[in-house]
Amino acid sequence: MWLFPWASYAAIVGMLAILVAMALTPGQAKDLYFSLVTLVLACARTWSCAAAVRAWHGGRSRRELNTGVAGLNADGARARVDPRP
Image (cartoon, rainbow, N blue to C red; front, side):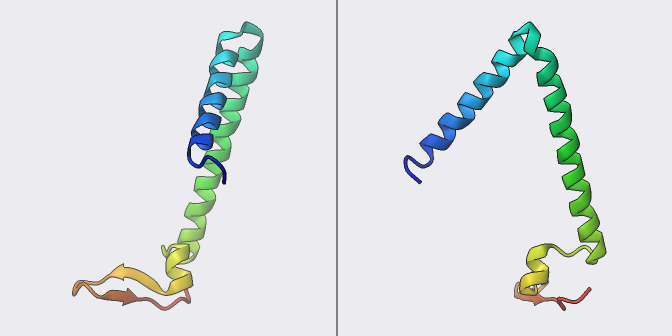
């Protein structure tokens, strides 16, 4: 990507500037608050679905399921796990 990471930083600053402008504009404040509530609900839903998937797979992450590596055991060696729940 060209200008990485500076273009990403500029895009984030631009988005924040738009949000601040929406908060300060009386006609746009209602839309901003509705958008923020929608964002919070979407994040909560994503988090709850991820928690449900982890619970379904016995608390194992996607990385553990795909690689069979759970991290380090007590001896400092990589611990292997059975990829089946």
